[in-house]
Image (cartoon, rainbow, N blue to C red; front, side, top):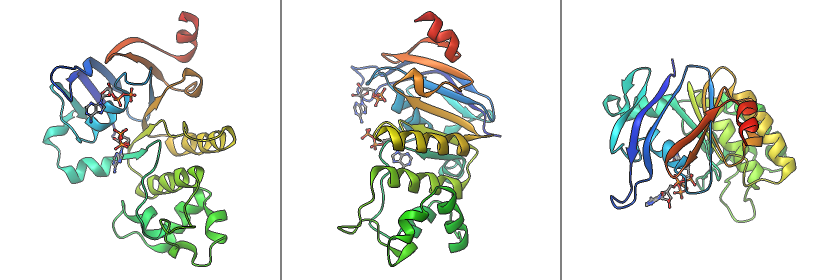
Length: 229
Ligand code: ADP
Ligand code: ADP
Protein backbone atom coordinates (compact mmCIF):
# COMPACT_ATOMS: atom_id res chain seq x y z
CA UNK A 1 0.00 0.00 0.00
CA UNK A 2 0.90 3.65 0.23
CA UNK A 3 -0.09 5.02 -3.20
CA UNK A 4 -0.62 8.78 -2.95
CA UNK A 5 -2.53 10.78 -5.57
CA UNK A 6 -3.31 14.47 -5.83
CA UNK A 7 -5.99 15.05 -8.48
CA UNK A 8 -6.39 18.62 -9.73
CA UNK A 9 -6.07 20.03 -6.23
CA UNK A 10 -7.01 23.66 -5.65
CA UNK A 11 -6.60 25.28 -2.26
CA UNK A 12 -6.53 28.74 -0.64
CA UNK A 13 -6.12 29.75 3.02
CA UNK A 14 -7.75 33.03 2.06
CA UNK A 15 -10.28 32.95 -0.83
CA UNK A 16 -8.70 36.05 -2.37
CA UNK A 17 -5.27 34.35 -2.64
CA UNK A 18 -5.13 30.96 -4.36
CA UNK A 19 -2.23 28.85 -3.08
CA UNK A 20 -2.57 25.61 -5.06
CA UNK A 21 -4.01 25.94 -8.55
CA UNK A 22 -4.70 22.53 -10.03
CA UNK A 23 -1.90 20.32 -8.71
CA UNK A 24 -1.86 16.70 -9.89
CA UNK A 25 0.67 13.98 -9.22
CA UNK A 26 0.92 10.38 -8.24
CA UNK A 27 3.42 8.57 -6.04
CA UNK A 28 3.25 4.82 -6.64
CA UNK A 29 3.88 2.65 -3.56
CA UNK A 30 7.56 2.60 -2.63
CA UNK A 31 8.51 5.47 -4.94
CA UNK A 32 9.99 8.85 -4.09
CA UNK A 33 8.57 12.10 -5.44
CA UNK A 34 10.28 15.40 -4.76
CA UNK A 35 8.70 18.85 -4.93
CA UNK A 36 11.05 21.78 -5.34
CA UNK A 37 10.33 25.44 -5.84
CA UNK A 38 10.76 28.88 -4.32
CA UNK A 39 9.59 29.82 -0.86
CA UNK A 40 5.85 30.49 -0.85
CA UNK A 41 5.15 28.25 -3.86
CA UNK A 42 2.83 26.03 -1.80
CA UNK A 43 5.13 23.07 -1.07
CA UNK A 44 4.41 22.70 2.65
CA UNK A 45 0.73 23.20 1.95
CA UNK A 46 0.80 19.86 0.11
CA UNK A 47 1.87 18.17 3.34
CA UNK A 48 -0.72 20.04 5.44
CA UNK A 49 -3.47 18.88 3.06
CA UNK A 50 -2.23 15.29 3.17
CA UNK A 51 -2.47 15.37 6.99
CA UNK A 52 -5.88 17.08 6.70
CA UNK A 53 -4.80 20.08 8.76
CA UNK A 54 -6.87 21.68 5.97
CA UNK A 55 -9.14 20.17 3.33
CA UNK A 56 -8.80 20.74 -0.40
CA UNK A 57 -10.92 23.48 -1.98
CA UNK A 58 -11.59 21.31 -5.00
CA UNK A 59 -10.08 18.18 -6.51
CA UNK A 60 -9.15 15.31 -4.26
CA UNK A 61 -6.34 13.49 -2.52
CA UNK A 62 -6.37 9.71 -2.32
CA UNK A 63 -4.31 7.09 -0.52
CA UNK A 64 -4.58 3.65 -2.10
CA UNK A 65 -7.52 4.95 -4.11
CA UNK A 66 -9.51 6.18 -1.11
CA UNK A 67 -10.38 9.86 -0.71
CA UNK A 68 -8.62 10.91 2.51
CA UNK A 69 -11.82 12.74 3.59
CA UNK A 70 -13.47 9.34 3.95
CA UNK A 71 -10.64 7.82 6.01
CA UNK A 72 -10.69 8.07 9.82
CA UNK A 73 -8.19 10.47 11.39
CA UNK A 74 -6.68 7.55 13.27
CA UNK A 75 -6.10 5.51 10.14
CA UNK A 76 -4.82 8.52 8.18
CA UNK A 77 -2.33 9.41 10.94
CA UNK A 78 -1.11 5.87 11.17
CA UNK A 79 -0.26 5.77 7.47
CA UNK A 80 1.75 9.01 7.51
CA UNK A 81 5.04 10.03 9.09
CA UNK A 82 6.76 13.38 8.77
CA UNK A 83 10.23 14.70 9.41
CA UNK A 84 9.65 18.48 9.31
CA UNK A 85 12.28 21.23 9.14
CA UNK A 86 12.14 21.88 12.87
CA UNK A 87 10.90 18.88 14.78
CA UNK A 88 8.66 20.05 17.60
CA UNK A 89 9.49 18.29 20.86
CA UNK A 90 7.37 17.99 23.98
CA UNK A 91 8.86 19.10 27.28
CA UNK A 92 8.95 15.49 28.30
CA UNK A 93 11.41 12.63 28.28
CA UNK A 94 13.40 11.56 25.27
CA UNK A 95 11.59 8.19 25.42
CA UNK A 96 8.21 9.90 25.35
CA UNK A 97 9.24 12.09 22.43
CA UNK A 98 10.31 9.08 20.40
CA UNK A 99 7.47 6.79 21.45
CA UNK A 100 4.36 8.95 21.53
CA UNK A 101 3.33 8.28 17.94
CA UNK A 102 3.35 4.53 18.47
CA UNK A 103 1.01 3.42 21.22
CA UNK A 104 2.31 0.69 23.49
CA UNK A 105 5.90 0.75 22.27
CA UNK A 106 8.28 -0.85 24.76
CA UNK A 107 11.43 0.87 26.00
CA UNK A 108 13.45 -1.76 24.13
CA UNK A 109 11.73 -0.80 20.86
CA UNK A 110 12.26 2.90 21.58
CA UNK A 111 15.94 2.25 22.30
CA UNK A 112 16.34 0.28 19.07
CA UNK A 113 14.83 3.16 17.07
CA UNK A 114 17.04 5.67 18.88
CA UNK A 115 20.12 3.55 18.13
CA UNK A 116 19.19 3.32 14.48
CA UNK A 117 18.77 7.10 14.42
CA UNK A 118 22.21 7.43 16.04
CA UNK A 119 20.98 9.14 19.19
CA UNK A 120 23.19 6.98 21.42
CA UNK A 121 25.79 9.74 21.85
CA UNK A 122 23.20 12.04 23.33
CA UNK A 123 21.68 9.36 25.52
CA UNK A 124 25.06 8.26 26.87
CA UNK A 125 26.01 11.85 27.73
CA UNK A 126 23.05 12.42 30.06
CA UNK A 127 22.64 10.77 33.48
CA UNK A 128 18.97 9.86 33.02
CA UNK A 129 19.41 8.48 29.51
CA UNK A 130 16.01 7.99 27.90
CA UNK A 131 14.32 9.53 30.92
CA UNK A 132 16.05 12.86 30.26
CA UNK A 133 13.51 15.62 29.80
CA UNK A 134 14.45 17.15 26.46
CA UNK A 135 12.78 20.51 27.07
CA UNK A 136 14.51 21.35 30.32
CA UNK A 137 16.76 24.34 30.31
CA UNK A 138 20.33 23.28 29.65
CA UNK A 139 19.26 20.04 28.05
CA UNK A 140 18.01 21.50 24.83
CA UNK A 141 18.90 19.37 21.87
CA UNK A 142 20.85 20.70 18.92
CA UNK A 143 19.15 20.97 15.53
CA UNK A 144 20.76 17.76 14.34
CA UNK A 145 19.71 15.90 17.50
CA UNK A 146 16.13 17.11 17.15
CA UNK A 147 16.03 15.79 13.61
CA UNK A 148 17.37 12.47 14.88
CA UNK A 149 14.53 12.35 17.40
CA UNK A 150 12.05 12.93 14.56
CA UNK A 151 13.75 10.17 12.56
CA UNK A 152 13.67 7.78 15.53
CA UNK A 153 9.96 8.54 15.96
CA UNK A 154 9.36 7.74 12.31
CA UNK A 155 11.42 4.55 12.46
CA UNK A 156 9.45 3.34 15.46
CA UNK A 157 6.09 4.25 13.95
CA UNK A 158 7.05 2.67 10.60
CA UNK A 159 4.26 4.16 8.44
CA UNK A 160 4.00 3.30 4.71
CA UNK A 161 4.14 6.98 3.64
CA UNK A 162 6.83 9.46 4.66
CA UNK A 163 7.08 13.20 4.18
CA UNK A 164 10.42 14.96 4.51
CA UNK A 165 9.61 18.67 4.61
CA UNK A 166 12.89 20.59 4.26
CA UNK A 167 14.18 18.12 6.82
CA UNK A 168 17.83 19.12 6.43
CA UNK A 169 17.56 22.76 5.45
CA UNK A 170 18.16 24.17 8.95
CA UNK A 171 21.35 22.13 9.48
CA UNK A 172 25.02 22.88 8.88
CA UNK A 173 26.59 20.97 6.00
CA UNK A 174 28.12 18.23 8.18
CA UNK A 175 24.80 17.46 9.88
CA UNK A 176 22.96 17.88 6.60
CA UNK A 177 24.96 15.06 5.02
CA UNK A 178 24.57 12.80 8.05
CA UNK A 179 20.82 13.37 8.35
CA UNK A 180 20.35 13.06 4.58
CA UNK A 181 21.99 9.63 4.66
CA UNK A 182 19.62 8.58 7.45
CA UNK A 183 16.57 9.86 5.59
CA UNK A 184 17.63 7.91 2.51
CA UNK A 185 17.86 4.76 4.62
CA UNK A 186 14.52 5.37 6.38
CA UNK A 187 12.79 6.06 3.06
CA UNK A 188 13.90 2.88 1.32
CA UNK A 189 10.89 0.86 0.14
CA UNK A 190 8.47 3.51 1.40
CA UNK A 191 6.32 5.98 -0.45
CA UNK A 192 8.16 9.27 0.05
CA UNK A 193 7.22 12.89 -0.59
CA UNK A 194 10.30 15.09 -0.29
CA UNK A 195 9.92 18.84 -0.09
CA UNK A 196 13.11 20.72 -0.87
CA UNK A 197 14.19 24.10 -2.08
CA UNK A 198 17.17 22.91 -4.07
CA UNK A 199 17.29 20.42 -6.93
CA UNK A 200 20.74 19.25 -5.80
CA UNK A 201 19.32 17.58 -2.66
CA UNK A 202 16.87 15.32 -4.52
CA UNK A 203 19.10 13.64 -7.08
CA UNK A 204 17.69 10.14 -6.52
CA UNK A 205 13.94 10.94 -6.66
CA UNK A 206 11.84 8.88 -9.10
CA UNK A 207 10.13 12.10 -10.17
CA UNK A 208 10.65 15.76 -9.38
CA UNK A 209 7.98 18.45 -9.67
CA UNK A 210 8.84 22.12 -9.87
CA UNK A 211 6.11 24.13 -8.15
CA UNK A 212 5.74 27.86 -8.73
CA UNK A 213 2.80 29.94 -7.51
CA UNK A 214 0.85 26.79 -6.78
CA UNK A 215 1.27 25.30 -10.24
CA UNK A 216 3.47 22.47 -11.47
CA UNK A 217 5.61 24.19 -14.08
CA UNK A 218 7.98 21.30 -14.82
CA UNK A 219 8.31 17.63 -14.02
CA UNK A 220 10.91 14.99 -14.73
CA UNK A 221 13.91 13.20 -13.36
CA UNK A 222 16.92 15.07 -12.00
CA UNK A 223 19.02 14.82 -15.18
CA UNK A 224 16.11 15.94 -17.37
CA UNK A 225 15.43 19.00 -15.25
CA UNK A 226 19.14 19.91 -15.17
CA UNK A 227 19.23 19.68 -18.96
CA UNK A 228 16.22 22.01 -19.17
CA UNK A 229 17.78 24.66 -16.91
P1 ADP B 1 6.35 26.82 0.63
O1 ADP B 1 6.32 25.59 1.49
O2 ADP B 1 6.51 26.53 -0.83
O3 ADP B 1 7.31 27.85 1.10
P2 ADP B 1 3.71 27.25 1.79
O4 ADP B 1 2.91 26.09 1.36
O5 ADP B 1 4.23 27.27 3.18
O6 ADP B 1 4.89 27.50 0.74
O7 ADP B 1 2.87 28.58 1.59
C1 ADP B 1 2.22 28.91 0.37
C2 ADP B 1 1.54 30.26 0.51
O8 ADP B 1 0.50 30.16 1.48
C3 ADP B 1 2.45 31.38 0.98
O9 ADP B 1 2.08 32.55 0.29
C4 ADP B 1 2.16 31.49 2.45
O10 ADP B 1 2.37 32.80 2.89
C5 ADP B 1 0.68 31.14 2.50
N1 ADP B 1 0.32 30.52 3.78
C6 ADP B 1 0.94 29.47 4.37
N2 ADP B 1 0.32 29.14 5.51
C7 ADP B 1 -0.72 30.00 5.65
C8 ADP B 1 -1.75 30.16 6.61
N3 ADP B 1 -1.83 29.36 7.69
N4 ADP B 1 -2.64 31.17 6.43
C9 ADP B 1 -2.57 31.97 5.35
N5 ADP B 1 -1.62 31.86 4.38
C10 ADP B 1 -0.71 30.90 4.54
P1 ADP C 1 4.36 26.71 9.47
O1 ADP C 1 5.50 26.56 8.51
O2 ADP C 1 3.12 27.24 8.80
O3 ADP C 1 4.68 27.43 10.74
P2 ADP C 1 4.37 24.34 11.11
O4 ADP C 1 5.59 24.84 11.78
O5 ADP C 1 3.14 24.16 11.92
O6 ADP C 1 3.97 25.22 9.83
O7 ADP C 1 4.69 22.95 10.46
C1 ADP C 1 5.78 22.79 9.57
C2 ADP C 1 5.53 21.56 8.76
O8 ADP C 1 5.51 20.41 9.60
C3 ADP C 1 4.21 21.62 8.05
O9 ADP C 1 4.38 21.09 6.76
C4 ADP C 1 3.29 20.75 8.88
O10 ADP C 1 2.39 20.08 8.04
C5 ADP C 1 4.25 19.78 9.51
N1 ADP C 1 3.88 19.39 10.88
C6 ADP C 1 4.17 20.04 12.01
N2 ADP C 1 3.73 19.37 13.08
C7 ADP C 1 3.14 18.27 12.62
C8 ADP C 1 2.49 17.16 13.23
N3 ADP C 1 2.34 17.04 14.53
N4 ADP C 1 2.01 16.22 12.42
C9 ADP C 1 2.15 16.33 11.11
N5 ADP C 1 2.76 17.32 10.49
C10 ADP C 1 3.26 18.28 11.21
